Each structure stands twice: as C-alpha cells, then as structure tokens.
Length: 234
Image (cartoon, rainbow, N blue to C red; front, side, top):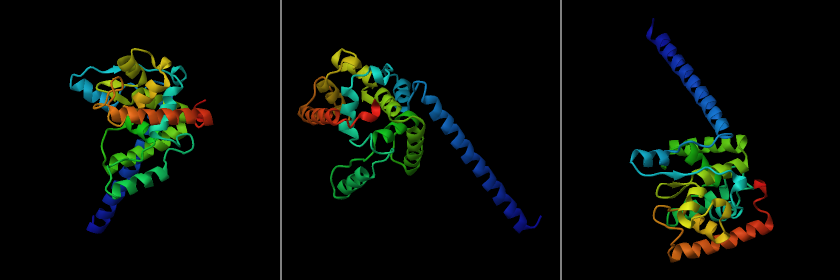
C-alpha cells in the first residue's frame, strides 16, 4: 500500500479508537454517577490514601434528612453562598478568586460545593488541567442526575473533616461526642470553619481564627435560614 493511503488508514483508525474511548468514558461516567444517586459513596481517594498508609478511617453515612438543618446551612454559609442558585459553577466567585490571587493575596479557589463534591466523590486531589476538566464534567453530571439535596448529602458525608475523619457524622462524634442530627448552630459552624484545613484545625478546641470564622459562619447560617436561601434542600 502506498505511503499516503497507509497514513490515512492509520489516522482513520486512531480517530475511530479515540471516538470509541470517549464514548466509553461518557457511558461509564454516567452509569457511575447514576449509581451514586442511590447508594452511598463507598470510598474516596483520600480515604484510600489513609487506609493504605495504615491510618484509622472514621466515617458513618447519614441521610440528609437526619442531619441537623444547621449543618447544610453552615456549609452554604462557609463554602458556597449561591449553592441553591447556580447550576454547579459560580462564575462570579471564580472571577473574584482569580482577582484576589492575581493581586498577590493568599491563593484561594472559587469552587462550589458541587465542584468539591464531584472532586471528592470521583477524583483525586490536585490542580492539573486534566483533573479540573474532569471535575467540570462530573459537576455537570451530578447537577443533572443528582440534584441539590443529593449533592449536599454526598458532600456532607465524604468531605474530610479531620485526620482520618470523613463526613459530618464522624466529625460530630469525634469533636462533640454527639450525632450530626443534634449539632447546634455553633457546633456546625465550627466544623464548617475547619474545612479549608481540616488536618491543622480542630473544631472542639479552635484557635482564635477558627472561633472568629465560625462566628461569621454562624451569622451567615442564621441569615440563610431566615431568608430561605437553602430552600432547594427541602
């Protein structure tokens, strides 16, 4: 076979295999997300990391309707004020974060709770373009397939909330010796306040910064409840 037709044949095969792989990825990811719509997320990358390292992992899945209302309100107040209003991405928050980072302030992301949930449930930590692209894809899928209540439920059950502590029920037991169903506004706010750095911070014995931050979250949570900003979770 002449060189030119052979080259075209190879390119055609490569395109065909690429299309097949993309379609397979789409199918697998949709089925994966659909499965997690109904069953608890069994394992995340950080959980596996801790288990492989021989660290004790604490977690206990709890349905959203059993978790104290103060908890999702604190999460919204701390992490994503427009959680019920956006469709997975808060572009104004991303723009504000980019502006702060460009101006030399401490690096800060603009990820929504939906994006964080997509990352926590399906992906690995990191800042590569590949991972961010996959995060965006899974964010779209969970917004479409799960809806807001399930996204919040998964977020509150898989987020790392201390060394080897995953989910709000394990955090409530660890820090306050109570169930997530009984967390007060102050306790929920303190757990939310440690989420940016759960390994370095402690909700039970918070430092001055965490105390101040938790008070701000508590005020935001009260406002969220008063104004019905969390109505998408009802």
